[in-house]
Length: 249
Length: 321
Image (tube, rainbow over all chains, first blue to last red; front, side):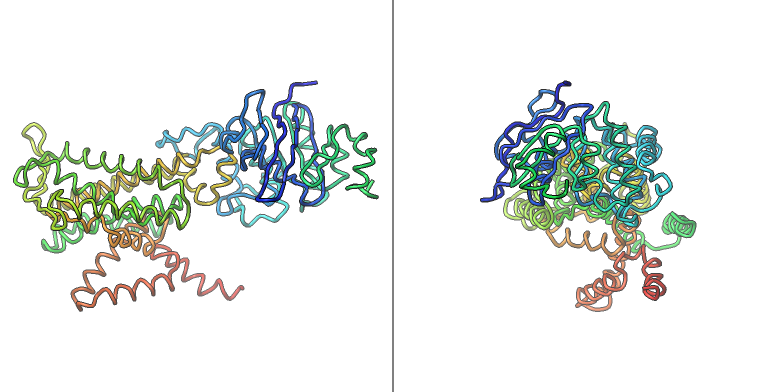
């Protein structure tokens, strides 16, 4: 089994008296899609925010390829190759879809001191943006302002922006929410394509999609890990059935 | 820029070039003052309109540069060299902006407004309550800096027309520099910060460093304006750092339209010229000025430079719902 790229150990986060994430340990390995499922309020999004550096953990550790990064700010994790998407589309509404992705790609090779070079003529970020838009099927919409895109298109743009930063680790927070069947299939195919060299964490409510694509599943309830393992083992786990899946399977 | 705008800008530039040939000393001096304020307003636009950082303490750098001009002179009757005093003044402002920005940028939104205001008021009281450069009375600059290099003088700041053309060149240079900055990756990142800072961080941008760089550049350019304001007035006093001055320049930016530099220039012209007009009509001119600003903000929320878009919106936009 490959060495984990991003791994968290005993991750805990309180919000006042509320324990949002309770001693969660998770390993994300390249070539694996690791799904995290759980009811609303189980702590999935908080977990992503902790892994991406958006929130600092109350206790516990995060490391990337063995280097400790607990409490590192989000821009540092992102520049080291941890890309994320947000549960609610979080784009630049007053920029075109292309500029959203170009700006994302610019983060890879920012060179802010080269003020005599025009951003729109930057070949590396422009090329990366076009590739990312093509990957999610948004090429035709590249000149439309992000704020004018449909909900589903904005979800795709969200993923394209993450891809444009060329991450090694992808933390995807409900990427399929609000997408039509065709769009969902395209995103799932894209994730399979991305999988071989990258570690992917997928928080998702669509159980069919999760069991179709995940290599490993972690089930969360009330902030803690209820069960973790291969999809078949998780599906058969009686406590998971009782707490969450019910008749869905 | 559309063709109409380009034509308008070219005509305005030609008019500015021709002005000293046709107008008297009063108007040449007035428009030179407007151009200094336009440079000041553009520097604030880099923060407010481009990066989304509303500073209410920008006059601190404007005033600091003018005090540096007084302090570098051995006595008020000796002409200092423009080529040493100007870099010193601008450098001091850049350093001050770096230090103030490093602290103020740890806050956001309304707190950022309050912290920048507090820093500029601290600067105000440093010059007001101590004996530095005449304390609350201020100090005169009897002789203007000399532009001579090794005996040869390319221009003479004592001449009204020379000073006017120097300020026009300054305005054009600062405009071209800032346009270049905005078109670069740095400028695009600043606009990204204004649009959605959280997303910028998640993409891997160290937004604090970007904002600090913008704050430092804006402080240095404000210093450039403050230096020449002191040269023109021949007088400095603590009011140049006071919050009225910060509020006035913010009004210029809002009046003209934020985020496109041209708006800051138009705003500075409108503000200073109207102030001049109203104060010639009545001693209660701040009332007229206030009324005008309220009307402009209500009727032209995008500023004077976006008047045509706003008009189109009122005329056609609402009918379609």
